[in-house]
Image (cartoon, rainbow, N blue to C red; front, side, top):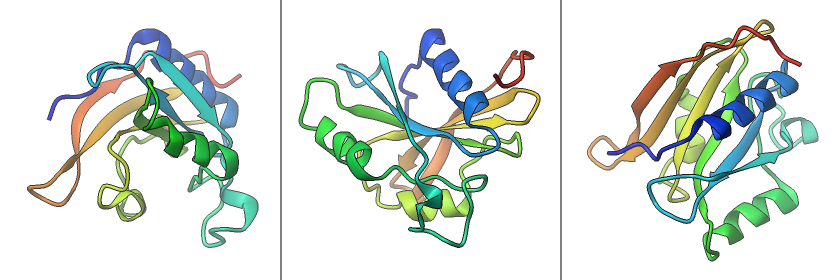
Length: 153
C-alpha cells in the first residue's frame, strides 16, 4: 500500500485546522485529480456534539454531517474526488482507534485516513492509514513527527 502524497502546504493547512479546533477534534478531507497525490483541503465542521453520537464529546470524536457529508459523497463523481479523510486526536497521539476502525470499516469510501496528534501546545505527530484486505482493517502506512512549536492559534 502506497501512501497518497500530501504536500507541505496541505499538511500545514490541516495542522492549522487542528490547532484552531482544539480542544475539539478537527475533521475534513483531501481532494486530488490523481490517485497518488492530493492538492486541496476541505475543512469540515465537527458535528459530533449535534446529538448524533451522545457517548462521546467533540474532544474525543468527530462527525462530518449534513451538506459537508453530501459534498464528500458527491466528490467521488467529480474530477477531484476525496482521497484522504483527516481528523485530529487531542491527546497528542496519531493512531487509528478502535472507534475509528469501527466507523470506517468496509471500507465505506475509497479513501485513506490521516490522523493528527495535537495538544494545547502543538501538533505532535501524524500517521496515515489505508485499508488492508489481508487483515480486514486499516493499517498504518506512513508516520512522521511534526516540527511545529507555534501552539494553537
